[in-house]
Image (cartoon, rainbow, N blue to C red; front, side, top):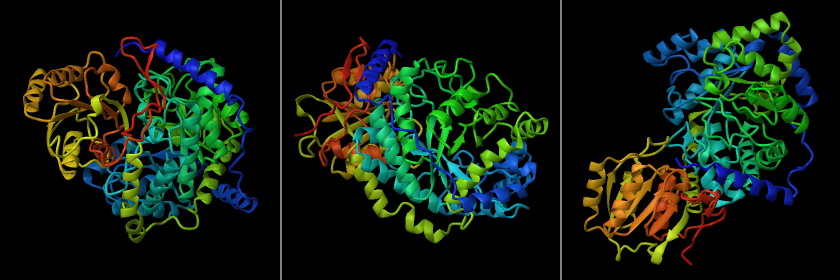
Length: 608
């Protein structure tokens, strides 16, 4: 990938200057939220007083578990549970460790279908209420939509964050969250780790990218607040992430420890606005980032373990008193410096409430128990976090009614009106960047033969097939004759030759591109196809920066993800069934001179 450091610094300076000019550095007064009602407060304190120390510590943990059932998972999942946690089932996990929450993953086989998810949730809640001190659980997942979605079809898959950023509608963002939240709640999932509040000012960011709403802090702030309100109006907890801001990094915190080099002033103007907006909107929880941020804390501790960041800034300066949850403690960014038994202790001392998915639950739990028994962490400090957690459970109605039903699932999940809203929303996000000679929109009479080639990355949850196949089917349903040919993310010479041969006799070639770099074989594929003389249309199916690397194409668009809903919408735009309305939420810099902007924020063509 070419060096984008200069363009990144240029963007930072411009963004900071814009924010200062708009008066956003000094944000609104901090909002103090989530203070429990006095009667609830007293009742929850009485509940905490009945808990043993082990039960109290257990409430702090949110843990993975393998299997589709709380009591009868498949044998392979039983073996994984025994290997990693020393229990056979989710019900045993709750009974033995008194965990306060469970996180669902598709790879843990928790999310096969909506009825199964509802049954799993009910089984977990029954286990929570069967404890000597009955407490319901916070069941959570990462349902950001776009490239990160743990629950797939037949649930409604909405456009992802950057697509919504391209749409620019806070109403659409809120509606998308309301629909997603209602469907999660119907399946018994009551805490969603969304929206992403990171401002993606680094095109080389390997972990955030299209998970962010964009590069404009104020636009991101508005969409984050809208989604927080949308999720929470649907009766689930919303979680903004990753505090204090993960948008400017070239390292993935899953595999290393990123260092954010923003100054304090840059943090105030670039990274902070979405978190301030989320807090003002009453966000239920905030997730920490496994990043070093020297301007906020000169130690080399990640933010997850930083008291100056989590208590000094988030709690005291921003006035946030809701639940703070770590990012997954399995990630390398938080494990580089301390052992798995010490990380949870340091996180609690920093100001965290929920400890998410430690790699070794026994070591993590024993570390916290030992710290309490030795006096390193006071019982009062533990109870402070438990009160926040139980207050959230109270707010969500889990003490009154923790169970869901198949009837509720059928009335809510993947219903026709939700799917139609997803389609309409996606149509407003597709962005047209190039349209030489008004090639688009295509005409069924003028361009009857289409070849769809390109990258076919692993399909996100809910996709019905690889992007080339989904696009070809969408064009066929629109009346075109379309053929699909997968050439892959790194097409071989043989595959490129096959694509060039297949282009013969076609009227237009549609190329799905995926994170094209200067050395990418995808550039060769596009160049060879352009050389055939057949008009080439490129569709960036992830990051929208691809067009900077591609020359000679007649038309170029950005879809921001390769889920069915976004690909079908892009096909309708290309075919002219709807006009392109999306506008870039991030700038695209020139490939040969990254200090120059090729397409600025807000750029997008229309057919008018």
